[in-house]
Length: 253
Length: 171
Image (tube, rainbow over all chains, first blue to last red; front, side, top):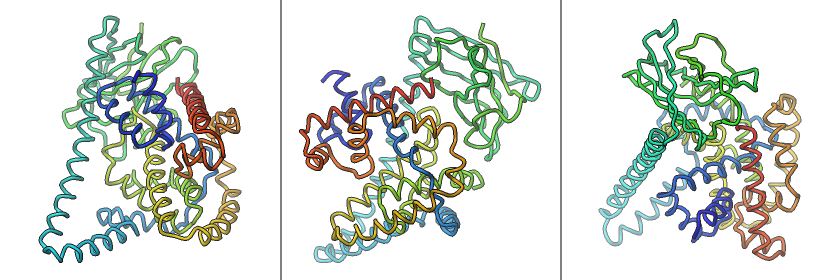
């Protein structure tokens, strides 16, 4: 199968219409192909347009408290699914009692282990993807390096931008950033020549060592990027910067 | 926790609308909404803003759970009862939708709407049957009485157009 074939399957899979065989084949391929993985992410995001077209409907006010209670109690708010799972597990336990109750506990433990390993695997795959994209950007023949310097409120902060025009992407490494509070996120802004307002390029957190990195895909390289800047914003980011207290900034010459 | 409450306040109406559309039943939609946000909380580390937006991440969780619920309901329930309930709920949420949320339709929603209205009706219909009803290519073909290849092509073309429009929103 060619990359084009896989992109076609990705389009179907994004709306859940790929067959089980196609989906399995696609998953195998995505594990080793970054461009197809990127295409899959774009199709998945595009599919959400179908949902975003719906008129919003406010859920009942009491549901909010119920969700927050569920979260505070460590995720017991899984509702009826958990209840159903519990019933299924109970039914299974009765069945298993025929051959020995100890098997039920083994199955439960294995399920827990399996879920834990699956989560770890997903996390590691994401980390591997990020590292792979960062390495590619650093090693490309046309990569440009741009320095961002710390401003008044964080003079020792700095950042290096590795811009890879041919792939329309960049990787930015930050150093000595103050740790952001739990209710705040750092947000990177592109200042474009063709737009009066800055455009968000992503939201990130700084580690305790003051370091962070962020990858930017689909950079608008056909238009001039005049500069980049980082501000501290409410958690999750905002449409437009709420302040001009730049943490780091720099011009793209 | 404040951030999570803000996340809920920002997106719960959009997620609830999606779940009502998929499940057509307020009780199920509320349960799955709750599951969605609890899962978002427990899996918060899996969210990566560079890979996709916050709302897209929540929508993916909600849709997956909603379709799972829909499929298990299809298996265990008699469809006639469900059809009756869906009808009454749908008329309820249309009333809600005429409220304040509709008045604050954002610039992005207008752009989303234009992307979808630009799709030929047949392509959009095929996408909706897959996305909201969880139907496979062959189930859609059977439902519409069209050849499987035609349905596959419609979905592919529709998704390609949506992807292009999305790239235009976020160049």
